[in-house]
Image (tube, rainbow, N blue to C red; front, side, top):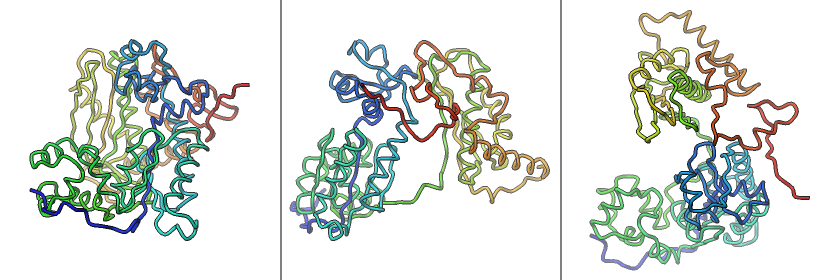
Length: 437
């Protein structure tokens, strides 16, 4: 089912030069950067959840991996250093990483907190050096300035650059020009191709396609029949034909927005669980209002201590972004889901989002009430900008506002050490670093 041609089309070195940077064990590496005494030691984050959220390479070498319970992890590694997840400090490191990338090129895409792409095409003349040296300089700058390691890949497309970035982890640098991409693809299992999920891998295995090189040898028409548009785009990407632009645009539109909260120890109290769920609704509404959106569908989820997911949803009679309007609906959905027991997480999803200027009143809606809700939402958002999110909140979320603590529930150091003028929710954009004297 593949082409008879087994020789890859020869391309000149870099018709496009795309970089992919992927931070190594990002959350754990950040902790090692701000705590030099942790370097070279097994470090994990996730103390607040009781489950490993991220593990340093020293911990991974001992069999500790993401998703493992802390109890099992400590059996594998008694000297394990267990820390709470510090999202605030990690977000500052993430911002700095992308700022460094933008010092080399303005065309940078923030793909996730710890991964991004940069387009270096056309910069050789300005820097008077090859693309490989420009990318290497970027790699060294991030490592040196942030004190963390990243793996960097350079090639002709985003799909190829992503494969390159994973080729020599951790702290690897792999540059593959056009004339050598067939060698890279021959060494890349199909499952390591970006966007190639397990179901697609299983399907292609039936056609004796096992490597990325086998995949690009297929006829394009067959790829389209089996995998559709996305599969065809990746087929072109792996052949060195860039189909996916490095997008610098900040994301402004969403199909849905979800907010979940995991807590340790588990919660059994009905009112406290309801409070966490309503806090999820408030957080989700804040986000969609930021992008001037409103939701037409609502889903709520409860996750039990046994990891069962209980989910129920409903269509809304009118699109909204107000927790005041959603809270009675959440109460009804929650009542139909809740059963006595221990729960480890709550979550909500606001879906079928539309622009808020497209919201239409229903026959029995009160224009005065809608205007009051709109003004209240505006006031809440303004207070949040000045004093931090949830400064003004529903009274029913008060139990969630009070820290839910147990034997394992600890706070990151940055939250426990508040500087003069800061509040619990409004911090200066600086992280703490420990300096040994």
